[in-house]
Image 1 (cartoon, rainbow, N blue to C red):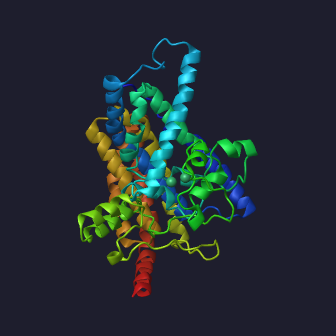
Image 2 (image 1 turned 90 degrees about the vertical axis):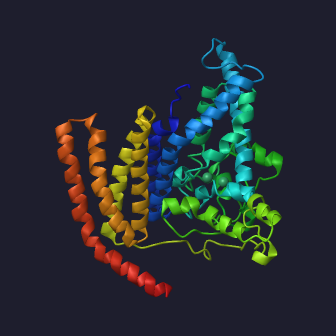
Image 3 (image 1 turned 120 degrees about the horizontal axis):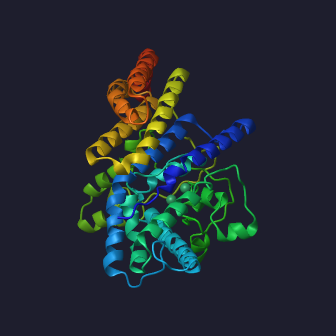
Length: 427
Ligand SMILES: [Zn+2]
Ligand SMILES: [Zn+2]
C-alpha cells in the first residue's frame, strides 16, 4: 500500500492559528460566536474522528486499491509514473471535480437517507458556527462515504492521488465554517462553496434544511436543485437536539433512537422505510412525520450547561495535554503495533468522554477522571521516553498527574451539588 501523507494532521497548527484569530476577533467585537463547552465538544469530536480514521482508513483504502488494481478501465497519468507534468496536472484537475461530484452525492444522501444521516449528523449538532465546527466530524462517517468514490478507482485515478485530492477537498471546507466573513465576490459565490452558502447548510430554519451539500464547488447544488442563498439569519443546529457534550453519546444517539423506532415497526416495509426515507419519517401509528418548526435566533433555545470556573480551567488544561498527545499519536500511529495503536486510541476516547462528562457536571466523570489520570501516567511515560530524556519524563509525568489530582478533588462537592440540583429540576 502506498504511504500517504496525512495532510489533515499536518494542518493542525494552521487550524489552531486560524481558530485563535477568529476567537480573538470574537472577543474584541463581543460577538459571542464561541462557547467553551460547545467548542470543546467540537474539537473532541474532531480528535476522535481522526483517531477512528486511523483504523477505518485501512479498510476503506483496501477497497479502492483492490478495484484500481484489478478492475480499472484505463490507467490515467499518476504521480508515480513518468507522465509529463501537464498530463498529471490535468488528471489532478479532473480528479478534483470527480471527488467533489461524488462528495456532493454522498453528502446529499447522508442528509436524505435516515440511516446514513446517523453517520453525518454529528457535524450538524453544534448550535454555534465557528471554525471549531469544521473539525466536528462523525467517527464512523468514513465507513460509509468511501463506497461513493469507488467509480474513481474504476476510471483509473491512482489511489495515492485520490487520497491527496480527498484531503485537500476536506481541508478546503475548514475556512467556510465562520461568521467572520460575510460574502465573497459574486463570481466566487457563484462557483465555489463559501461561508455564506455553508451557513445555510448548517441552518435549522425550515427553508435551509437539506440545502447546499457541495464540498468545494457550489455548482452541483445549482445543477441538481438543492441550492439556497442565505437570506434570513441562520439558526444553527439540528431539529432533534441530543443535549449532551459526551462525544460517544453524540455519535450514537441518533442511530439509537432510529433503531428503537425501527424495532416498533409493525411490518418489514415500514421498518425499511424508516431506514431509507428522510430522517424523521415514521408511520402514522408511531406519530407520523412532524413538520419542521419555524425558528428565529430569539426563539431558539440552545443546549447549555454551567460548570464552576475552576473546573472549566481544569478541563481546558487537560484538553491541551490531550491535543498534544493525540497529535503525536496521529503522527506515529501508522508505525505502531496494532495492540499499542488500539490501547492509545482507547485512552484518547476515554479522555474525551470523561471531559465531556465533566462539562455536563456528571459525577461518574469525576470518578472516571481519577481512573484516567492513573492510567495515563504509564502511557505518557512510555510515549515520551522515545522523544525525551527518560529520567526527566518519569519524574515530570507523575508530577503533572499529581497536580491534576490536587486540582480536581475539590470539585467533587460542586459536582455533587449540581447533580442534586438537576435531579430536583427533573423531578
Ligand atoms: Zn451536512
Ligand atoms: Zn459544515
